[in-house]
Length: 87
Image 1 (cartoon, rainbow, N blue to C red):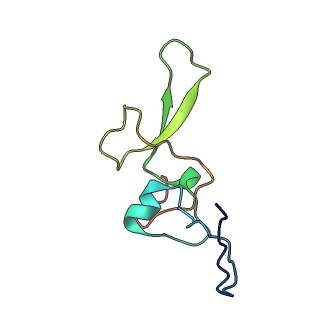
Image 2: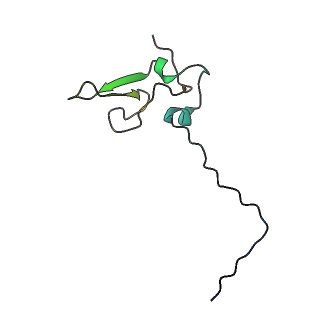
Image 3: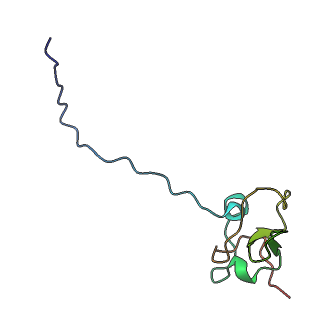
């Protein structure tokens, strides 16, 4: 049996993936000041591993579950609308 090929003359466009914002706070609240990053935010918390103090990661204190495996925050992320200058 022969396979029939249909050519409708439509241009083939590659599917583009939607760019997802990695910062969960910006997805939730929107962007804050243009030149601010999470590194200078008051709500940024540094967490350390109990047994290995060299291992650390950053969390936003505005998120509810701060001690679990929830999203970590990178210092270079653009600040969200809840941004507050560190004191």
